[in-house]
Length: 173
Image 1 (cartoon, rainbow, N blue to C red):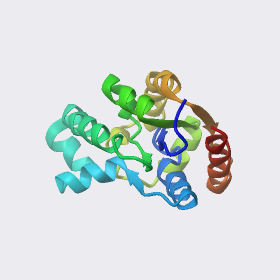
Image 2: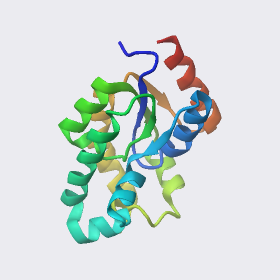
Image 3: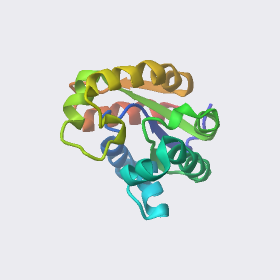
């Protein structure tokens, strides 16, 4: 059971709408919105693709763990996490014990549509983005579900409608 003032943490794959829906939720709740990937970029002064290029995924995940640890200690925020944040057991523990976790579930087709023009996704710089997204989802979906207090499917739904569904569930406690 979470406190009514608990932070709201959004998890899910890239392209699920975590940042867009997170901003809407933060606005509705009059709370600060934080995007963990943007926080990493702010702290390092480097873009996510540059961090991946210089330090590899392992270096990025190390930075991500520190940011998730710090951000989940904040009270009353709305946090959009990176798609792979759930890979680290430490991150899952921080998210599940320190706030209300919402899994924004989406299909690979929808992810492809939403990320088609986004060159800021290092894990999609591959010859077969569909295969990569499918592989990532197979690994991560059980982890998202493991820590989720609420799961909402975002395909074909307007962001405002998804935010309203989350708010309704969240406010009922």
